[in-house]
Image (cartoon, rainbow, N blue to C red; front, side, top):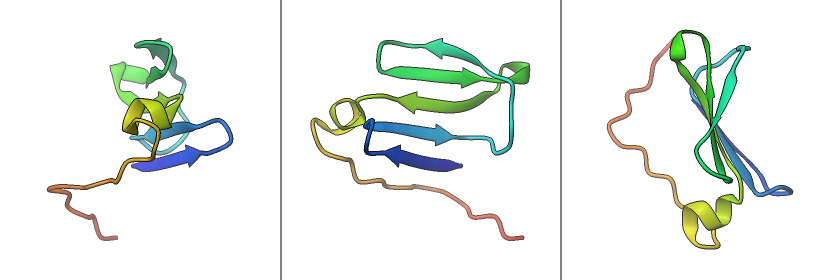
Length: 72
């Protein structure tokens, strides 16, 4: 999983599955869109106006719970 933030456009993208994918976009509202890939897998989530949507004008702290890291 990769989470990226573009401060110039105030957008967050959460990429759940790495690699290149053919996706269709499902807009939940004006600010949130889901990228759906083959087999109806959720590939990524785009959040526009991220500071407002996620944290009332700021950027949220990120807390990861119950995450097991894979080793190579």
